[in-house]
Image 1 (cartoon, rainbow, N blue to C red):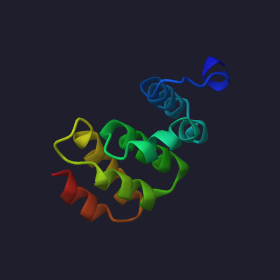
Image 2: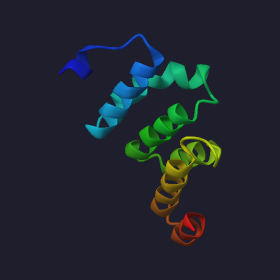
Image 3: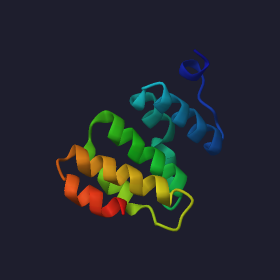
Image 4: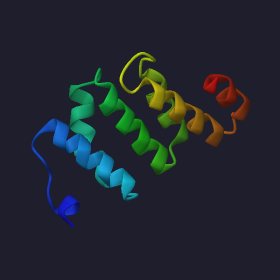
Length: 103
């Protein structure tokens, strides 16, 4: 209930709230929490990872794959981004490519 009724003013708190909403299966609420921050902080890997997760939960696999692919391998979100990219590609029917990227 708290998550649905409150919107944190701090960007880091919004990111945490967005992640919690994803865990609850609420990608639209998660998206609404971070949409402005995604535009303002395009180089924030954890924020971009969460945005890609939103797209994955929405079933927008190509958008999710694109978002995951933008995250640098060496960043704090790099490993999770490669895993998400693999899931997205598999959902798009590109299993062999997903398997290759997972190695």
